[in-house]
Each structure stands twice: as structure tokens, then as C-alpha cells.
Image 1 (cartoon, helix red, strand yellow):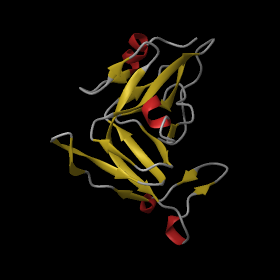
Image 2 (tube, helix red, strand yellow; image 1 turned 30 degrees about the vertical axis):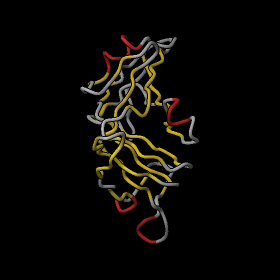
Image 3 (cartoon, one colour; image 1 turned 90 degrees about the horizontal axis):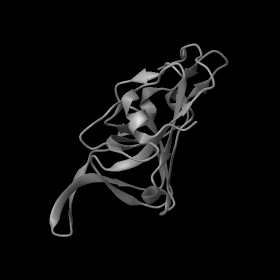
Length: 165
């Protein structure tokens, strides 16, 4: 069963920029980093008992001011590539739920994707983070609502998440 936005909001630390919707909560962006993998110390390792992702693959993108419709707007120019997106909102998934983030239609309509694997029962963090794949260059304002989080109820409670945070 999919929770309503009002029900889902109980499991999030909302920000001034969050928006409760009919079937979820819109999440607002606070940080964007370019993801660049390669050789040497920039190679992630997906091992059978853990994942090792070097911090060096993430390069912070500094927001800039632009003029838009007669006013200054602070945000990021993002171009084709893979990005790490950090949201203002936090999460604490109870043992009878899982959560998933997907892009808002405004991102998708111009050919870009925000998607996550499932957030397991028991997962928690102060600032939710996910991946954004950009095919069409765009400008993203600081605190813009980029994605929506949805919560699904499990048929019964389960054990708590014990993976890497």
C-alpha cells in the first residue's frame, strides 16, 4: 500500500522547502556534486560484503547567481553527466515501511532522471541523498523541489537495515 503524503511526512524531517503532495513529499536540493569515476583512487569497489566508494569521485559544484526574469537566482548549471544530489530533508524509515525517490515531472520532461534504490526499513539519515543523471543541461535553483519520495507499507514488520549508511 502506498502512503499518502501526509502519512509519509511523519517519517521525514521536513524543510521550509518541502511540499506534501497527495502520494508523497517533494524534496528540495541543498547540494549538488559531480560524480567522476575513473582509474586509480577514483574507482568504486562493489564487493560481496561491502561497497567502497572513494570520496574523491565527488566534486562539489558551487552555486552561482544568474539573472532570470529580472531577478537574481542562486543555483547550479548542470550539464550531461552523473551527479550526487543532497536534499534538505532527513528520513527515518520505520520497520513496516520502505521508501523510494523518483524525479518530479519537470526534471523528467526535459530528459533527465533522478532515481534511487529502495530505502530499507530502519534506514535513517539527516540529509537524504541520491543520484541524478543529466542528459539535457539545466539550471537548478538552490532549494528547488527536484524529486518526490514515496513510502510503501510492507505486509509485516521486518528487521532493521544493517547496511552501510
